[in-house]
Image: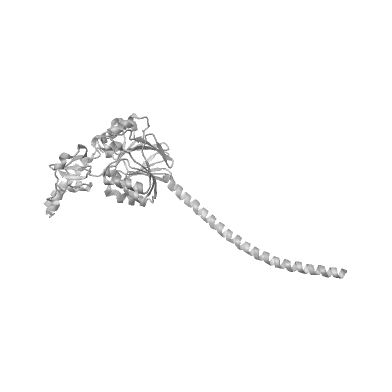
Length: 415
């Protein structure tokens, strides 16, 4: 019996050892797989560690950028005789106006180069072509969450396009209510105009805002005239601002002394076209800005103006230009220089064509700001023209056309 038991024990031991060896082989296989898996995980982990290091380095790089991007950056674009302001606050964007049709493609290209794909807000301050055309271009190309625009309507083609694109893309439309505040990144802006309705001048429907970032601020109000400015002064909203983007391209009918005193800006930025037909900015406006001690920046002199709000200061990309040189004076100087150049060229035997001479001949013309037409002063259309739209111009046809005007067919049909 004992022999049988010993035999059974031996058999059992043999079975156990055999199974154990098989299990061991399986375990080894699993172990090897686990090792492979562990090694793989280690590789992934080390890759992740490398990536984390990369991310950390990228973050450092972005931090160096975010010392700019984390602040508020504002670009007053050089769109000629028009207006367009781009605002970036912590990676969120707002566009205020877009210039005229001749700058629409420039604006879109400019925004694409900045790799902007989305605007949280687009503000159409009012519906004049020199502010609205570029907005329509931007709405067509970029994703836009909200459009803030005044309540009045017009029958112009650009306005119809503006309404159509908003409807087609189902863009949220916000009617401006004075005192309402909206956020952009860590910044916020408050609606300050328009304060009423029934204005005789559509410029007074211009949407005005005061944008604040930390303890720095800027104010922009489209083409608001003294009428709207008086209403802004009389309401209870704080408009004290470090930077004033000057109303209506620096025209004499805007930027009243009371308005400027309440804003009390350290800096003033004027968007106007070089050699524009309106003489913007007006000497009177420049004089008032100088009187309050504002440092002046001008797109007609210096091109695009950029400023950035840091915790300690406001930085500009250009030096201020406080010479009292109105657009009218610059226009006149430019015209006189052109005449001198023509005289020199003529004395040197210039053989320009009669057609060219005719095209550049200086004469008295009347420009219609609304239709953008050039009229001779004896044209019957001039008598029917609203005084608000009438501009007397003593420059050349080429200079007027450079500002976006075209010849009246009746006036120039034989030329």
